[in-house]
Length: 137
Image (tube, rainbow, N blue to C red; front, side, top):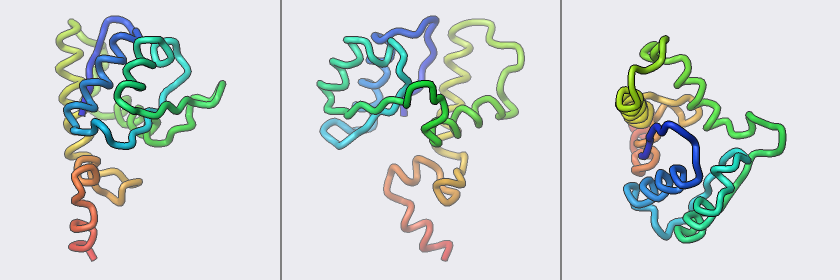
């Protein structure tokens, strides 16, 4: 899992985040696809080089279609509607980073997703899904 907050959106920051995520999740050499928008940071040279070096396949949203990835849309909907979302913003970049890290941990380890048969992403990612679903049956 990787999450971070920056003061600006750049290909360099996006590249660093994806590199960190692939390494932390032990996904180097695995078949990965990164779906993103068509923005400059995601199509910038630094990001493209990082994805190529890591062997990550690129997938982009269709032009003028902001909602073509239901998993991303679900994440953003939950983020914007979670009761702990700060109404009045953040006092500092560090406060925003702390909140985002806590949200990402909760979302991936505790929040049960209907599209994942009410499992957490961590349970699916770590191969626990079949065992948990069998116990439910």
